[in-house]
Amino acid sequence: MTAHQPPQTVRANGIDICYEIFGNDNAEPLLLIMGLGAQMIHWDDAFCEQLATHGFRVIRFDNRDIGKSSHLTGGKRLTPLELLKLRFLRIPVAAPYRLIDMAKDTVALMDALGIKSAHLVGASMGGMIAQEVTLSFPDRVRSLTSIMSTTGNPRVPPPTREAAAMLMAPPPQSKEEFIVRFGQTWKVLRVGSFPEEEALDLDRAERVFARGLNPAGVGRQLRAVLASGSRKERLRDVKTPTLVIHGTVDPLVRPEGGKDTAESIPGAKLLMIDGMGHALPMRFWPEIIRAIDKHAHGAAAQAA
Image (cartoon, rainbow, N blue to C red; front, top):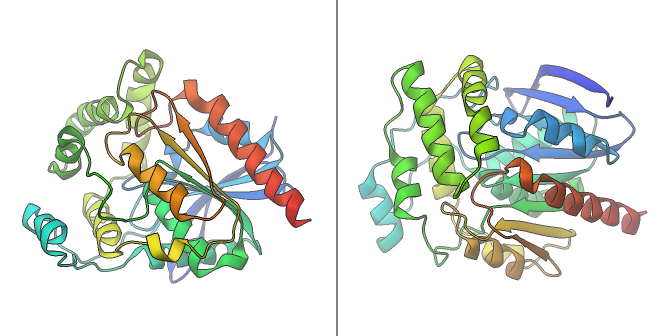
């Protein structure tokens, strides 16, 4: 059995951040940063436990505006017109906060936990936040793993029509509607047949719903991503050991997003996972955990 500290809340960067720790206090600290509109429990309990058995102190947390962390205010629902202006006229989207603010949340959480530096693993928007922490606070990052994420480069192909429609759909109005939408959403994001995941979707949806939804917060997070622009040029200066993991059939952040990230960061390693979409299904865990383990412990050994 790995050591486990149940969820707690700490004040950091002026907000409350809910976090949970798996693994021993003296193990290599590894922070898991989740994506757009996704609570920390989207890093599956068993995934966290398995990482912890590889000698990591695994910390997952709710980003601002999601789950049990502080819910903020401001920012209207994003309109298709704003997206068109951004895409074709490069007119930036207005946002109450940006990815740099979420990066500062991450660093402030590390401060509150007494962690000088950690391995960062970010998925989707979490990968963007992890990139931003690495760019703005390089001394706090032992290694970077960017999963199913991108650089913000506008030349990367946009999401598929189906994935984009799902992102822009109005929020569900009832628990029943939320549960149906949850199942539909993950079916689109996983791409292909994953009966072992679908069997767990009802329980997962119930758990997410019970921790609390914040549709307006998801809108603010999306604005933060779009308002933050491209990191591509700045990523050339990254000296942190970097691993990029991406699925070959990702419909939301296209495979080119992962390739662009790896090409932009000097010395980055790229792992393309055949048949993986924009999700972390159990069947891909062994390959993903093995890669993170080798990368992070390799970086730690080099730094020693």
